[in-house]
Amino acid sequence: MSETSSPLEEIADINRELVRRVATEDRNTNRDIYDALEDEYLTSSFIGEYIRASMNPQRPMHDLLEHPSGR
Picture 1 (cartoon, rainbow, N blue to C red):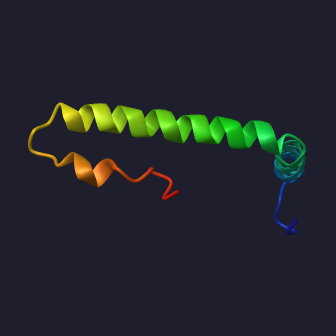
Picture 2 (spheres, rainbow, N blue to C red):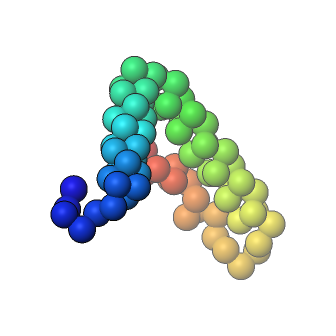
């Protein structure tokens, strides 16, 4: 904290740091859930993009054969 910070700014900084730590710990504790949600999101994004491309005759669909995550 700098000397020019107000008490309210210092409290906000502390709060942001606590939220960051809790989010990191939650992510580490529930990694399998977060990974599954991420995979589901990427898969649904890929399917949506595939459907949009299939409706557009100007866009070749072979560009979509790779998963958006690069996997």
